[in-house]
Amino acid sequence: MTVGIVLAAVAAILVGSTLQRLSGTGVGLVVAPVLALLMGPALGVFVTNSTTVVSGFLIMLAVIKDVDWKRYLIFMPMALLGAVPAAFMVRAVGPAWLNIVIGSVVLAALALTFGAPRVPYVRSHALTATTGMVGGFLNTSAGVAAPAMVMYSRFARWDQRSFAATMQPTFMTMGLFSVATKLMVGATTFSQLPPWWLFPIIVTTVVVGIRIGAWLSTRVSLESARTLAISLAGLGAAVAIVRGVAALASN
Image 1 (cartoon, rainbow, N blue to C red):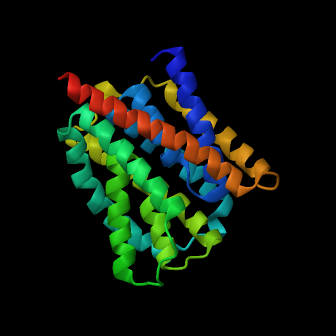
Image 2: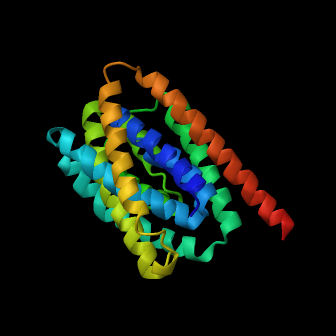
Image 3: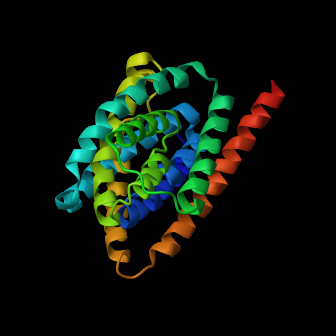
């Protein structure tokens, strides 16, 4: 864990946390592809999951009055059902293929999140449950649950304020499920975890990012923040795919 890797990881977490405070999503999209490149895909997503636990909890404290707990309680059991097979997949798939999966998921996520046309109104418990399961799978395998949740919010015509607030406990719990299931099935072992001192740095960076996001919320347009996130996430995802393909070609 070199100084360069730590600084690059801190920068990605700072930007992701800032965007998360501004719009309700952002940590996974920005942080997952960057950390996958810096630390390897399995460990990078694991650290991303840990970061979403911290960011989700801290931001939730500020927006808890707007959380839709009924939807959250439908999401969560299904998210666990999605997390378990994803953890086994992470354990079975090699680093090269996992890099390709992460990069592809992030690029697809960007296309769906920011480029999808208007969708029909659909609201049902079945859709909510399915979204939770898909989100749990994507969060555990690639560190990116936001696409499933954003698409659901569009189908359900979910108010942005309530959606952004509800995503915080949702991402926090999905992160916990992802970390726990991967440790339980051996997709990530305790010996592979980064040094203990990295976690206080993550917490501090998330706190700073949230503060910056709160300060920017009245000064910077959400569109500008999204443009930065798209640029960073897209670049990281593209490099992850190239790296994975190159590793497969060299074998």
